[in-house]
Length: 177
Image (cartoon, rainbow, N blue to C red; front, side, top):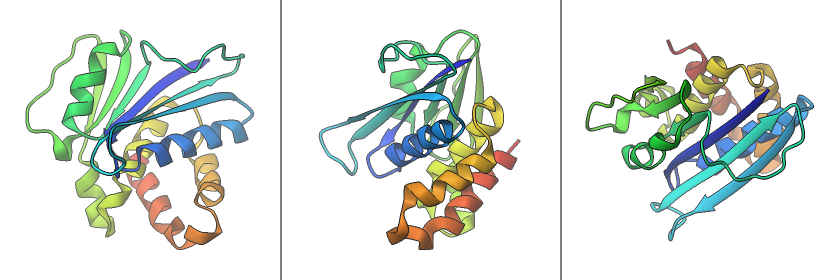
């Protein structure tokens, strides 16, 4: 098994946090992992993306040319990275921020209104967790339970007040059909 994932969006949308959480959950499941962040010119508002590779074999390089999955938090990230997704790959896009219809041949596309779902939970900042929950449900690369457990460790003591909301957002994404 080998999953190569690109997560992308604007700085401030929690892309790096989602990537870190996914990588941590995979490590907790005993899998090999690489995590490679990439920031645009500005931290908040600029572009941000990260790649996560999860494998049951050794990983030779953290570089991903043709990911098996793309988690796109906005339209510009979708436009930039979708042409690189492997045939029969998966694209999960935050449809709350899409202005135009998308059609890409030979890949599965899941449009999820992540920002709207996060707002219904009380905070649009957890849209990243909604998208991640949907990815975990589709890919089965890690369990949702392990991800929930990892959330406490990745958030740390200083942000444990965010634990419940983030768990609710992961579950909301996992349940989205």
